[in-house]
Length: 312
Image (cartoon, rainbow, N blue to C red; front, side, top):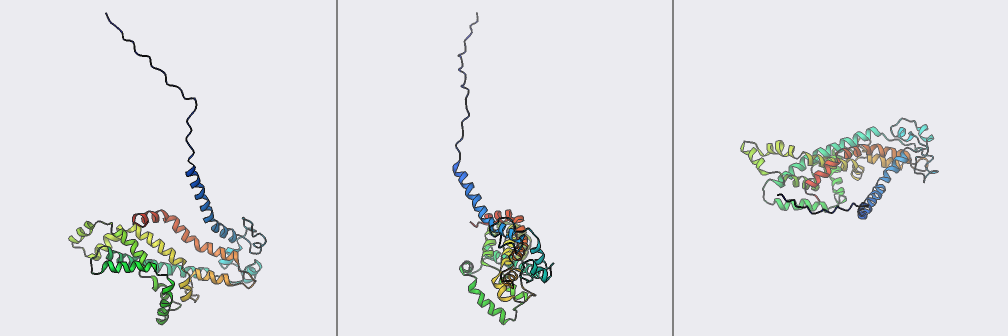
């Protein structure tokens, strides 16, 4: 005779009538709103430069508060590239002045490239010496180098100018390049932080195989430091490209005048009583495009390399 055991009845789960709503993350919403507002405020001057560059110079005063270009035209860019005569420039509301744009662009490229190549290479050698070589007073010398970060550049401008003048290098490319071509405290500190993170075993193994210290630096250290060196090169190039005060002191001749100084001189030319704002903004926009494109292309690498190098 078999017996059956009755299973206890299971109570059915209640079916939810409505979904539970998650609380609105107001903190994140406020953070995003503030970020968007700050971004718009930051980008507005660039938009205003773009709007002025595509405007007619004579219509700017009448439509000063309009967010759209005043009488959309490309005449400002034609004046910048020297595609108009003096009569046409004056008829378009220009100042009548002319920017030898391609000449000044060439000078800026020469100066910025020479400074970047020299500064990155010599700073890498100095940073490697501070990170790996052991010599008396190394930490003291490095502290002195870091203390130079607190010295404003204006303090060294006059001594450098007197030195360049005594050497007869005024209005020459060496006079523009030499004061900043070797190294800077920031560049040395930046690369030293990366070199400290490279395992010493790699260098010791190479030296056991007969490699010299210079060969280790050129064949092992520099290839491994490609990312921070690229980052330092971009930052140095941008700084050299935007430099204004030193080229203004040393490079007064057209043959060596850089683009930033040329834009300042172009702004001061006001034969019609007011600067050629449309032409000035067009020239500034064209001059800034290479640097903006360079930073956009390598921006992620710059941020990651700075974080990896320990700079907070």
